[in-house]
Image (cartoon, rainbow, N blue to C red; front, side, top):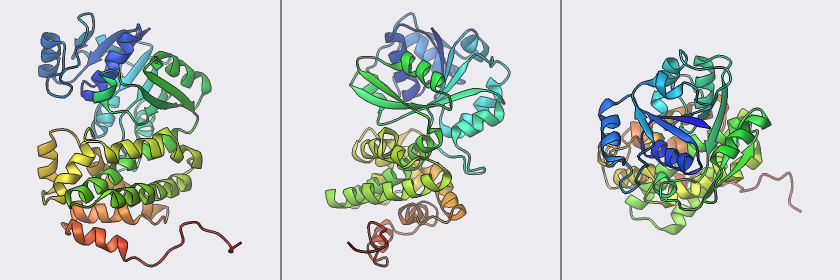
Length: 335
């Protein structure tokens, strides 16, 4: 089928190559003409996905109408802060028989909306699916075996997307829990910042394992309170994505966290990473959601203090260790 990938960052380019290799006709759109010129000239994103060569037949354009016309699937792969503006523009070209597959991860701070909420708000009546899981663009672009999940409100939509993306190196599962998938995808970036900060402070594997485990507890508590399914948070878009984001140097959130742990400000860390660090944008939204749903999220709270209140990272992590004693499992009585 004909597929348009909207956004020519590392993730958009990796998915465009995967879809082309699956036999689809792929067009990549970017609002940045310089980026399109570079891709047409080099057939490689030399800044964000160096070494992943793209086929001569792949089309690169800054003309959104040309990109989406006659496309069955529209993959939105812009940074989360640009999802709303992209959806506003896309509305003029969207057709009711098209499926929008959002692969951006985040929560809008002003509205606390997920990315699919934003798209549905800007394009009423649109069919939106989400794709998420442990999947670094650097590895997907090289054909490293990866497993991911597609969420949609209707089974048939999820299965169309599953069929389009599935390959011998890219296994796709389906799920009806769109909300749970998006909450896990957005908030794992905040926990990955905390894991990176711990690395930057020189802490070890014990600390990282604790942050991953207790971070997942925070994410799942909030996600279930919002209406997500518990099993989602212990699946690919929950613990799977959290592990890979906290452990890998491909993770821009972890890399930024390491720099913050070494004393950089959040802005200095993002400038050094040279990519959008989604966890910085999702941290405030995560804290606001925790307050709205009356959910205890101490790691998310401390990340906010480090990022926005300029509190020392070492002090914030120590604060987590000396909190009041808790039970790990909430039980009515001892057996």
